[in-house]
Length: 67
Image (cartoon, rainbow, N blue to C red):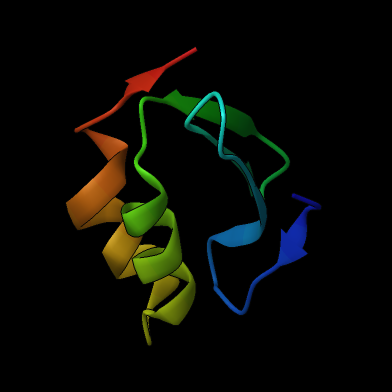
């Protein structure tokens, strides 16, 4: 999938790779993180969440491995 700009105070854009279950996040401060083993369902819920930052913090940040 292509990178998607998101409406968030902390997150600038995300990209998801279905086959690898990899969720890439570019933060507004310029840092980048790639989360491994993220199911597509979590990615889709993230996109629908009214607060991307809250959803990310509670459902992705400390749950999936960063590389």
